[in-house]
Length: 150
Image (cartoon, rainbow, N blue to C red):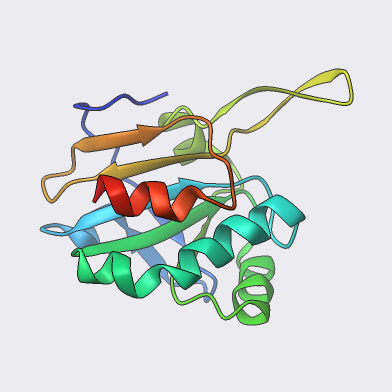
């Protein structure tokens, strides 16, 4: 997983509308990149709504939010619309960006181990450097942690 002080990998992914979004589009701004397992699941919904409810405060601190999962743009569009999410959700079906950030690894549920997206967040500064990494996120309270880091 990326650590604080490292350069964030460049990426370009389609958003919920199929438009290409690049990290470099936000050069000169802070970017909150959060990785989540799946659209419209309980934990992911709590986390997304937490970012939604804190969105203006995040913007006021000069940052933008980008959510990334392996879901396709159509699923992102439904999820974004259903919960009125004001930020882009990016699709990484090949998990290249997810892996580049180190947000892919072993998980455990119901006594079983499997590979999956690790719920994690990275705050990236205006120069593209990770200034805060959250490797193990609690969905409901996470936006408040991000606001503190900003």
